[in-house]
Amino acid sequence: MNLKLVLHIIGTLCMVLGGFMLTPIVWTWYYGDGEILTWTLEPLAVLLGGWLLRRLTKTDEELRFKESFAAVTLGWIVMGVTGALPYLRSGALTNFTDALFESISGFTTTGASVITDVEVLPHGILFWRMLTHWLGGMGIIMLAVAIIPFLGVGGMELFRAEVPGPVTDRLTPRIASTAKILWVVYVVITALEVVLLLLGGMSLFDAINHAFATVATGGFSTRNLSIGFYHSLYIEVVVVIFMVLSGANFVLHYRLCKGDLKAYWRSTEMLVYLGVLLSFTLFITFSLVLQSARPVGAALRESFFNVASIGTTTGFATADFALWPSAAQFLLVILMIMGACAGSTGGGLKMFRVVVLVRLLLRSVKRQLYPEAVIPVYLDDRFVTEQDGMEILGYFFLYLGALALSSFLLAANGLDLLSSVSATATTLANAGPGLNVVGPMSNFAALPVMSKYVLIADMFLGRLEFFTVLVLLYPATWRK
Image (cartoon, one colour):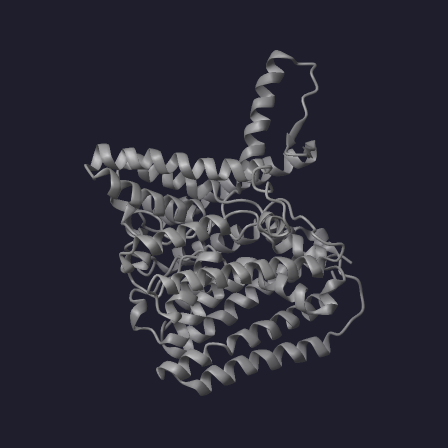
C-alpha cells in the first residue's frame, strides 16, 4: 500500500470540498442569518490543509486498485467528518454523533435526519445540507477525477470504486472525459428541474435545494413536511419525473442526448425499473382504496409520488406511509431493498443485480430438467460470466447479512422489530425514512447513540457498496 499516494488524493479531495464549502456564503449574506466570517475561515482551513497535504505527499507513482480502494474509503470518511463541522459550528446540532450522522446521511444521499425542525435553521446550513446531497450523488471523487489532471492517470480505479452499481461504462477513452460528461449531464438535469420548480411557484432558494436533493436522490428538504408542504400536484409531478430520471443509468441520458432515441428501450434494466415502479404504484393504490377507503384519485396521487420516492431511494414524502396498510408498507420495504439502476444516483441492490439474480434462478430451475445443458445468462448484449454471477450472489448475501446483523443490533439496543428492520433497510439502501418510530413524519433523533453509529456504518457501506470498504480489512491490501 502506497499511503503517500492515498494521502495525496485525499488532499485533492479536501481542496475540492473546501471550495464548495465556501458557497453557502452567498445565501448567508443574502438572508443575513449567519456568520459570514465563519463560513469563510472554515472552508479556507480545509482548502489550505488539502493543499499542504498534496504538496507534502507529491508523487508520480502509479495508482493501483489497493490505493484506489483506500483513497475512496478514507476520503469519504474525511468528507463525512469535515461535513459535520458546519453543523457543530453553527449550533444546528450540538454533539458530534448527530452532526456526523447528518453529514454522512447527506453525502451518501440517504436523507435520514436527526434535525427535528429544519425550518428554523439558517439558510447557509440548509444549503450545505442539500449541497452534501448533490456532491455525494454523482460522487465528489468522481468530480475530482473530472477536474484534476493528476487523477486522470489511474482514475478508472477511483471511478469504479466510487460510482454506485456493478457496471460502469466508459463513454470515452479517457476516464476523466467520461467523468466530465456524466457531471455535465448531472448539472443540466439539475438546472432543468430548478427552472420547472420555479414555474411551479417555489422560491429560488427552495427550487435549487429541492433540485439538488431530487437529482441526487437524497431526500433532504427545506420544509418539515417535505414536498407535502406545497400541496401542489404540478410540483409533485415534476419531482417524480426527475426522481425517476435520476434513478436511471446516467449513461442512457447521455446517449439520448447524443441522438440515440431508443437507448432507454434497449435497456432491460430500465424497462424492469419502470415496470416495477408502475406495478407497485397500482398495487399500493388498490391497497389504499380497499383497506383505507381513500378515493381512487387521492390514493393514486399518494401512491404515485411515494412509490417513486422510495423506489428511487430519494426519500421525499407527501404522506405518512407509516400509517398505510401493512401490505403497502411491505411493498415499500421491498422497493427500498431493490433500489434504482446501476450508474444512477440511487441506492439499494440495483435493478441490474435483481434482474441477473432472477435469471440465475431461472437457469438453476432449467438445469434441473436439463442437467447437461449449457445455459448462458445475458443482460442485453452483455454476457454474464460465472465470476460476474458469483460476485452478484456474494453481494446479495452480504447485503442480507448486513441487514440481519444491523437489525439485530438495533433491536438489542431497545428498538422494536419494525423500526429496527426498516431503519436498517432504509439506511443500507440510502433511501431516507423508514417505518414506525423512524417514519416519514418523524426522524432518527431519538435513537440511542449506538444505534446511530450502526446506521452511520450502514449508510457508508450502502453507498460504497461493501467491497470498496471491506477490501481494506484484508491483510494483503496493506502489503507492498
